[in-house]
Length: 242
Image 1 (tube, one colour):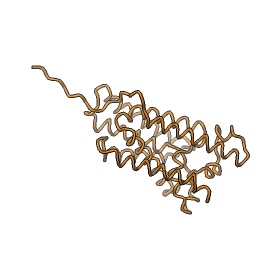
Image 2 (image 1 turned 135 degrees about the vertical axis):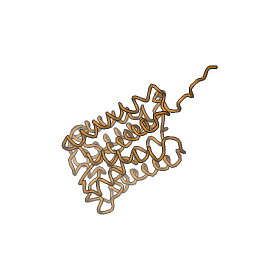
Image 3 (image 1 turned 45 degrees about the horizontal axis):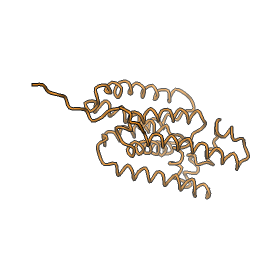
Image 4 (image 1 turned 60 degrees about the vertical axis):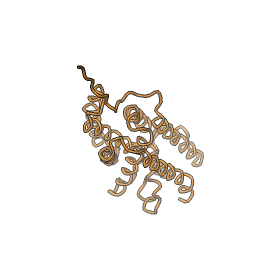
């Protein structure tokens, strides 16, 4: 009598579409372009500079960036909007490429709502904790990306029996080494908010440990909606009153 092994439920095989991944990348690019163009028009500066090169502290503050001074006055929506903002085009490109890679690996497993929610929670928690420990200014999607990366390593190692055999090495040692290298780089290169990476990493581990991609997506859909609402409020009304 022959027996067959059960088919593992998790696989990194990429479907034809990755709606959450592409939607998030589109939002990041759109936010960068719109905030750059609006700032250039209002402040009468070069659009090229606003889109491609380093955005100084004041520019980032004026388009919704995180900074401890406005946060002290109650502009908490900046904890959300800052996750979608980037310091320059290279910063945006690196994060967009990272999120595409993570989306290919994890969105098929987590689903669109959970993948977006884990990103958002990682980014917002990193933003909040960075402010609490004294970080003056920090913007970008790195906290959310590290949350997804750490969650992927956790799921790959702790739940290795759930993966397709071909994916176990990728979702375990390979992704783990990638995480370790990027984490180290964040602490070695000046100008990178390594604390945001650390807080995002911790958030991703906590999320993956609490919910290994099996429960209802409803709470995550609500989380995404709340984050979107906070960003809409911040850019539509918060900046007008700043």
